[in-house]
Image (cartoon, rainbow, N blue to C red; front, side):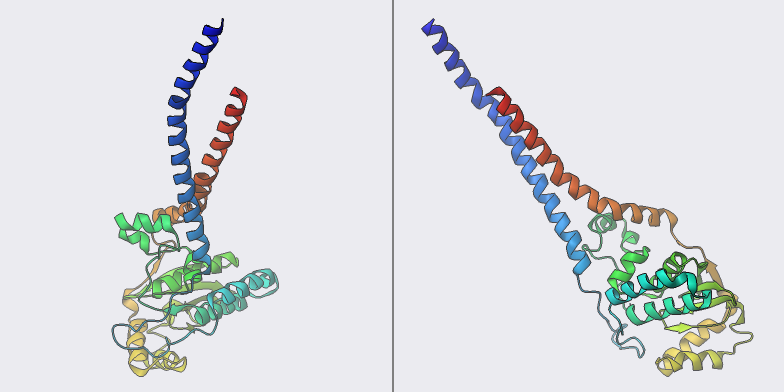
Length: 289
C-alpha cells in the first residue's frame, strides 16, 4: 500500500511540470496580447487629446488668409452640437451659414493633410500598403485634426451639413474643391477652405458673377491679391466645373467608417480575452486541487 502511494506521488510530481509548460506559454502570450491591446487603447485616447495640425506655409510662402484659426476644433465641434439641437428652429440658410462659419474658423489650410497614426492606427496601417487610405473622408476625423486641403474642408462641410438635415455635395473647380448646399434660396456654393459663403449657385460663376467681382469677394475675407486673382480665375472658368458625389471614394469611405469601430473593438478584445482565459484557467486549477 505504502509503495503504491509513493509511486502515485512520484508520478504526479513528474507530470505536473509538463502541464505547467503550456500554461506558462499561454500566460506569456496572453500578457503580450493584453499589453498590445492596452497600448492601442492608449493610442486611441491620445488621438482624442492630441493637438490639431498646425499651419504650414504652402511651399515656402505663407498665404494671407490662412494664418490662424479663431476657434479650436474642440470648441467648434462643441458649438456644432448646440447647432444640431437648435437646427429644427433655424432656416436652412442659417444652418448652412453657421456651419460654414464654424468650419472656416477652426479648420486650417495646410499641406499636412495625411492621417496620423493616433487618428486611426488601423487605417494608418492600411495606408502603409495603400497610400490613399491616409487621405481621410470622415467628418469627425477631419474636424478633430483641424486642418487639411480644400477637398477635405469641403468633405467636412458636406458630411456635417447632412447631419443638419441639409442636402449637400462636392464641386470640382479645376483643381480646387468646394461644397454646394441646398437651402430655401436654392443651391449655394460654400468654400470653407477659402472662407467664403456664396449665396449663389455654381452656374452664376463666370456668367452673372464676373471674374473681377469674384476676386473682390475673395480679397475681402483676407486673401492677398495674387491668391484672389488665381482663385477668381478658377471660379470663373465654368466650362470645367463639375459636381462630385460624396463620398468621392465610397468603398474607401466605408472601410474608413469600419476602421473607426475596429480601432476600439480590436484592442478591447486583446485585453479582455486573455483576462477571461486566465480566470477560467484559475478556476480549473482550483477544481483540480
